Image (cartoon, rainbow, N blue to C red; front, side, top):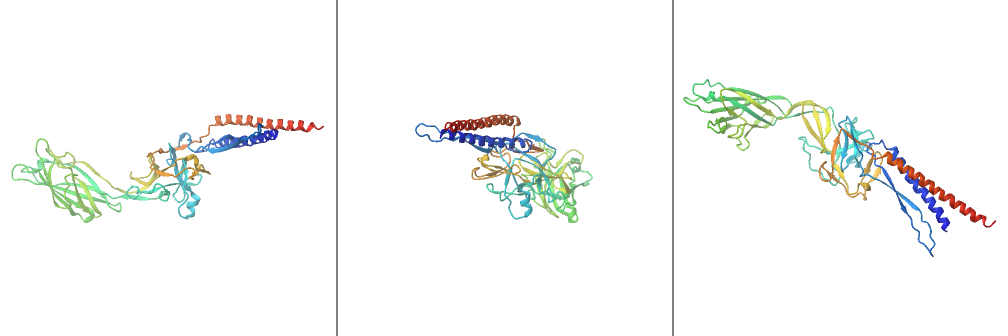
Length: 433
């Protein structure tokens, strides 16, 4: 019985070391595979109960586990949509084949790196056929609130490289100095004109015509102006008219002291703004707070538009796409405009090593991995997303070669045990002769 158990233990040792060698060979074969997670083998002794003091060898059993939470080094690339996760968390992806079938929600898979480029339909797809998933943003670039414990809100990130976009102008700031000498008695009373371009809802160029009329007193100085605002899109109709009074005191000289609306929206002293209705809708114009040096001023003898700014942009073509560290996908246009079109979350699980390993360095959540949660990148326990980067294989070739030598020696030793048992059984057979 003892000799037979020795034979069984030797056979079990051969099988266990063969399993370990298979894991080592897999690790070495994938030493250049981006995002690969190494397989680790572990041996467990098998103890057989003893009877009457006789010992029986139980042998050994090998188990393998993929170490998913072990990360490789990051290497830089030249593609802005080469992505890698730095720290905890994984990127949500889906199979391009499932998405191509168009049969509803695809299964969410997880990976830590990928080289994504647009395919024929504009999906950000890796060379292995994985499509990046994310939450679509609103037209204004904000991302709605989505459930974080399910993948139902995720959609394939699709980039329309032929997209045209424009942003309407909804606000502008006027930093203009009016000449104080024009409100003195005996001045000419000529108006000062200013034209500011803006973009309507269809990306067309329009303009706001602003006229400043000084109030010329019979004697002394009035420090008063009338501002008239016209809209070119409305046939140069007046959309706002305001009476402006400036301070001539020692501490606040040249700043606004009072603004009253003759027509158009009321003046908001807290924000220093007025709202006028142009052809495309309301537009907020900042003229400055009372007593503040910004906005409209009245100093010296020169009319000077010092700082004119506005939002909005003309229609432009998309030129590139990048993903920032927080997972926001930004589209860049040739007009200098940047729009947020998606947000890519990072998925975290209590036990990453409990996930099911699949092809193409992807993993699927399982009961052993625990329930997953979709975090904003750089939030909670997760790391951030690095663009222009790939994650190398977690295989240490030198360590694997060392383990292979040890495995080879252990295998040879177990083979020697089997050979020895065979010779002992042969001696036992020869006793009868």
